Image (cartoon, rainbow, N blue to C red; front, side, top):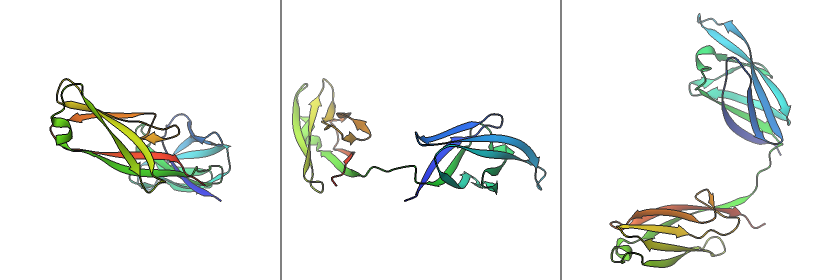
Length: 192
């Protein structure tokens, strides 16, 4: 099955830009020539050179619109927008990319101000996060009060789980002078 994959790159007017999606999919964008257009300005002709993989470029765009294709392997871009800063968006259709099926669960960790406010410095308490929609997967967390009015909260991560994009334990801090409401994203392999 072919998948639509979208990536971005900042293009160069003078040298090739290498775009690598993964180890199986890579292409270069090579500036060819500058040609005048009907608006008394110039367009750059850019060649697409496939290095790895089987794909069909569907679209090239940037923040002001689409680029025009001259043919399957060449597109035109107004010269002003190849400036070393403007990100171009490439969408391509390929079967050289496989997607892993994962669970992406969101949990809002809430800690009431009164649970923390009257802790003495260097006291802590523990809690549990139960993801009831995901086989009651459990994550332990600890709330540690330091010498000032801040707490450090650590959510213990399981092997193969990313919490807010991090593998292992996830730690953040906040004030004890207000309720804490902190969104957590749990990503892990789905059961088949």
